Length: 129
Image (cartoon, rainbow, N blue to C red; front, side, top):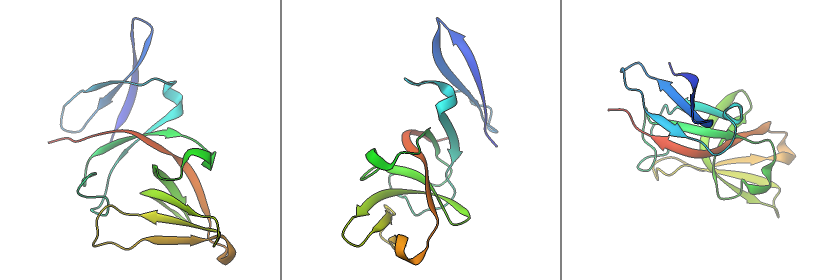
């Protein structure tokens, strides 16, 4: 479980993560804190760059205009996943790429009625030992 609380440090937005393991890293974020969500990664499909149990900070965005090629958190049908997004405009599909070659690319086809929404793009990641 990750709880986020704001601290005031010279009027600069910081976020303090209260982690189960007792560590308290502080991260400066350029934008307003209410525009960010913190997730703990669950799974190996983004390894070796993003490991299981890493913490990722997601900047909330509903606009897909800058998502092509970015690592994003998306809601697919009833699940939330972290993947690299690629648009295939010709086929009207969104491809969700894992970094781990042992996992397959997930194809979201608008013509098949797949439900897909953007939560946001990853702006920061760190690990907890």
